[in-house]
Length: 77
Image (cartoon, rainbow, N blue to C red; front, side, top):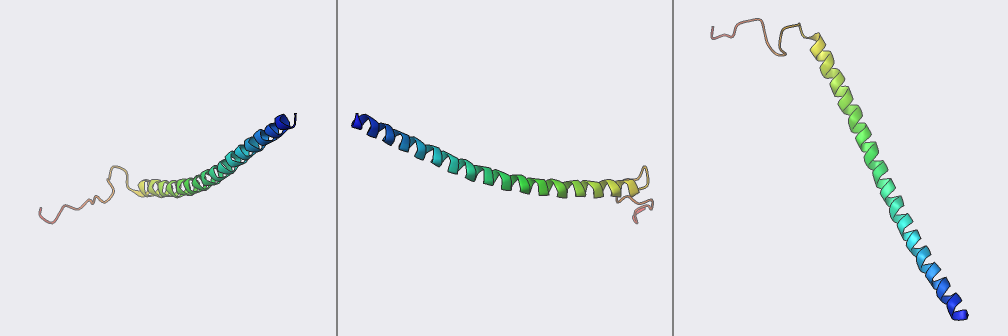
C-alpha cells in the first residue's frame, strides 16, 4: 500500500510541475501579447491621426484641383 501511495504522490508532483510549467509559459505569452497589443494600439492611433491630417489637407484643396497642381501653365508653354 505504501508503494501505491508513493507512486500516486510522485505522479501528482509531476502533474503539478507540468501545470506550473504551462502556467508560467502562458503568463509569458500573455505578457508578450499584451505588449504587442499596446504597440499596435499606438500605431493605430498614429495612423488615424495621419489619416485625419490627410483628410483635412484634401478638404482644404480647391475642388477639381489635384494636390500640387497649379493653375499656371508650365514655363515651356
